Length: 211
Image (cartoon, rainbow, N blue to C red):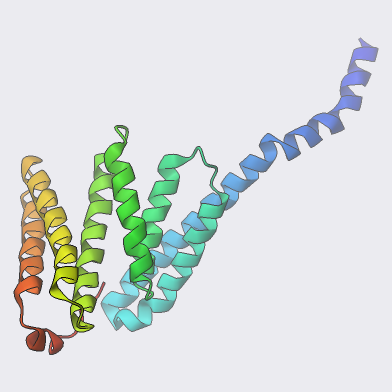
């Protein structure tokens, strides 16, 4: 009995080391990822509150903090944490849209929506959130493309994609019995149509909407 206890005691350092450099490392990475995600969410919430009170310019630094925190989390999350990773990608894209990274965010969102739509295990609410964010990115991209004087055939594809996404979301909200959600998306559809039809000179006189 004493011999068995002695052997077990002698093996403790080896067992502890094996855990530390094996499963323990993954646990530490998950803890660090969780902390980074929490910082990102807190910064995003602060950014929204600041924007509501002081305007988008004042909120920019908080969005930048959120972008950095979510980016850190993505480097720490294991590859098998697919759902968590997608959620962080979405939140980071929202932050990037507020920090002059619209093109990158738009590309990321297009890939994310495609992945979510093809995954039968996808949460419907997450897919709707990602699709609406993509539609917003496409809308703002169209606005900038028009101001830059790009050919109609180029920006028309972008705004049409935005309109289609808003339309799908409106139909889904209507089917779910969400009258307010359906009305919101119907308004977004109308905004997309107006952006496609408005005269460029008139558009140039309108302040660029907040992303």
